[in-house]
Length: 230
Image (cartoon, rainbow, N blue to C red; front, side, top):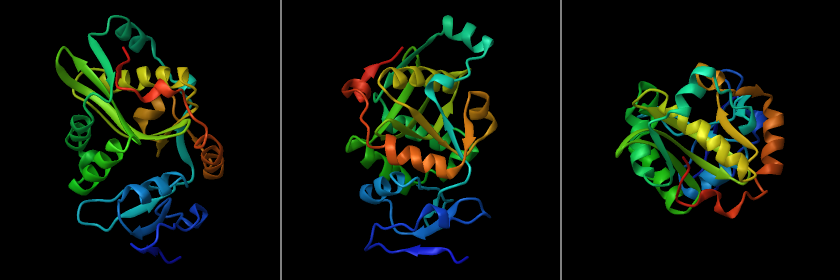
């Protein structure tokens, strides 16, 4: 099947069902990372991922990795750690720093190019993107960021510089999101880390059904306020 080339003059995407089986979920290439196109993509179960120097690639894998906030797996060791946690967790206090942490924190983060950073900073400025920060005293030691889509949070990336920092970010956020009527956290593609925390794979058709319903249902107004979560 031929890969579809997107036009900069149109925000339209092909149906996710047209995505390739190998590589799994590759749907289209080209276009841009404008806020309107990104929102249009996520509202259709599509997200960008590409390496530096490559064209923009758009994906909708089958199966899709998701996490129900109430299904977060809190291990005994993590529960003991969290009970005496040295960390403070905030929301939307340091989005640019979290973005940089995810970009430089590990090898998989190298896809967060200057172009991607600029696009996500614009989404944050428009109120669509949010960050969760983990602090040890005044030092940022971990965090995560993603896109709010009604009762879905599309997680993009996380990083950790100290023990259990990224786990703390996701655990505290999952509790907060559930308390504000959040229903689903999109993890895109399953990996050992997210699987150990409770993420599971579901058929793409099921994820698209979630998007069609939950993306248009609001969470509590205070969910995305700049605040301290823990």
